[in-house]
Image (cartoon, rainbow, N blue to C red; front, side, top):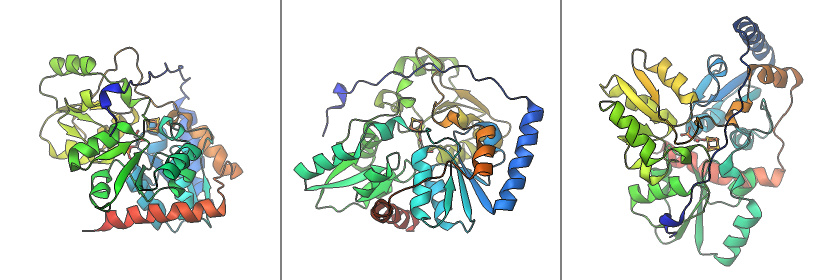
Length: 333
Ligand code: 13P
Ligand code: SF4
C-alpha cells in the first residue's frame, strides 16, 4: 500500500470569468432544447455538477451511479449526456446501438488523465496477481482492463464484494481508495491519481469555516484529502449528500464538493442553507471540465447530432463486463 504521507496534492487552476447568458436567451434556449428533445425521442441526463440551467431542463440529475443506472434502463433513442466525457462513454458502452451526444467533447477529468491505459496495462503485466477495481472516473480503455467498476456511491459495497483471495489494485483516485480502505479494512494498492478540484480543500481552510458556523455539519466528497475527510460529519457521493441533508435536522450545512452541487441541494432541501466550503488560495470549487457544458452547446449538439461518442467495438465489449458487474452488485439487496 502506498504511504499517503508522500502524496502531494496538485494545485488547481484559477477559473476564467464566464460571461453570463441573459435570462431571456436562457429561457428561449431551454424551450428549443425541450422541443428538439421530443422530436429526437431523446433523454437528457445531467450530473449534479452541471450549471443550474442544464440541471433544470434535464430528465434526470444525479451522481455517477444514478446516471449509469439511468443509462442502462433508458428506452430513449438518443442519450444526451451533460457531464464529462467518461460518463458519456459509460452510457455508450451500455447502449452501443444508440447515439450518445455530449455538449463538449473536451470535457475531460483530471482523474481520467492520471491513468493512461498503457501504463495500467504495463503494471498489470508485471503484477498479474492484482484484481483491478476502477473508479468510474477513467477512460473506456481503462475500464476494459478492469475487473469491476465502482463509483463513490457504491465503492464500499464493490470492495466488500471483491474476491477474498486476490490482491486488489484501486485506480485512479488515491483519496477515494484510501477512504474505502478505512471503511472496509481491505488493503489495496492505490494508483496515484486525484481530482484537481477536491484536493484544493485543506484542513486549515475547513477548520476556519467550521469555527464560523459551529452548528453546520460538514459534508465532504470522498475525493477530498484525508485531512479534510477527518473533519467531516458525512463523507459520501453527491447523491447521498441530498438524503443526508434532508434527514439531518440542521438548518445549515458546509459543502466540500464542486459548486454545481449547491444548486441541486438548494432545490431538494428548500429552507436549508448550504455554505460552499472555502478553498485555501482561490475560488477553485468549480470543475473546469464540468463547466465546459453550456445551454448553447447543449442545443448545438442536439441540432447537429454531434459530437457523439464513438468507441471501438472491442473496447465496448470488454468495458461492458466490469460495468455490468458493478450494476449487478449494486442491485443486490
Ligand atoms: P459522484 O459520483 O459522487 O457524483 O462524483 C463524481 C465526480 O466526478 C466527483 O468529482
Ligand atoms: Fe473529474 Fe474532479 Fe471534475 Fe469530478 S470534479 S469530473 S473528479 S476533475
